[in-house]
Amino acid sequence: MTSRVVVLTGGSSGIGRAAALAFAARGDKVVLAARGIADLERVAADCGGSALVVPTDVTVRAEVEDLADAAVDAFGRIDVWADSAAVMAYGRFEDLPPHIFDKTVTTDLLGPANVARAALRVFRAQGHGTLIMCSSLLAHITAPWMSAYVTAKWGQRGLLRTLRQETRDAPDIHVCELIPGSVNTPIYTSAANYAGFVGRPPPPVDSAARMGAAVVRLADRPRRSLSVGAVNLVTEFGFTALPPVFDALVGPLMSRFGLARRPTPPGTGNVLGPAPRTEGGPLRLGRSVLGAGIGLTAAAAALALRQRQTRSSSRP
Image 1: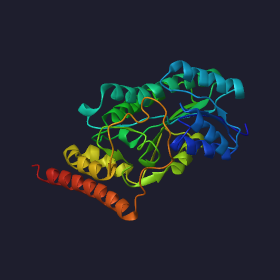
Image 2: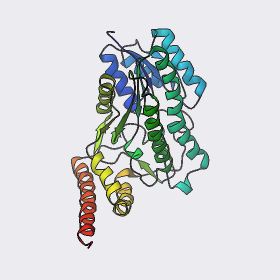
Image 3: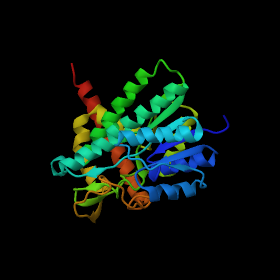
Image 4: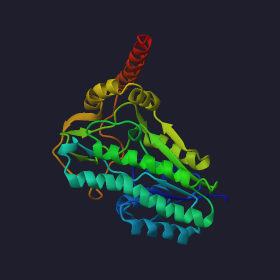
């Protein structure tokens, strides 16, 4: 096959848009899906106008099944399905309206489940396929003011592990997890917000194009997981090696670097429906801020290691 058929849910912005542009540039046939038709059509035009556009809400199972059927009807198969559809909500757990918490979890956990169900149905019938789920560093650590997103991403991680176990009988079906750190996309400013300040990606921040290239890399050479982020592994180490240290530091770090100083009134963002978006995060972060973020993260990891070594050496 000289080109692949690639379905991208969440293809209207951010990582999904970047992946769509990368696949289209290689000559692959692209099927774009998201809730907002206007954003999808703009991305389709950026892809050269040949992309198939199918407005789809991943929380509606019937729409996801119809998307799969539309792709197969148009191109005869689906070789790759990459899902990056997600929404975010900021605020303390007790401050988040229950329906906002529930909708965020539904979109970010049950949405991927709907995608996986539709993709695997097609993959089983044709005997091959690669499912790429865009997870998050927050599927491996936790952070305050993001309880709904964290809950969903931890659940998605469990789903992916289970799917890999259940597809061991089909060696040509691959289930892959992309684990981005902070990425410069509209998800932060589009988020529901009950924290009082506009959200932003904490440094160091990667471009959506880098993550889009990572999606293509997984499609080319499938693997269980691919973590992309300068401090992902260091942050995970701090989270698992000494939880009390991590928990003491993550709140101040999140307050300083994960929330901008720009106040914002409570709002539902794009959680309940599509909203106009602008590519890129709310702020350009200078090198000094990036360096501070890396330095603080490394310091947290070093402190965790030092305290762990001290405790070990003090044991009889």
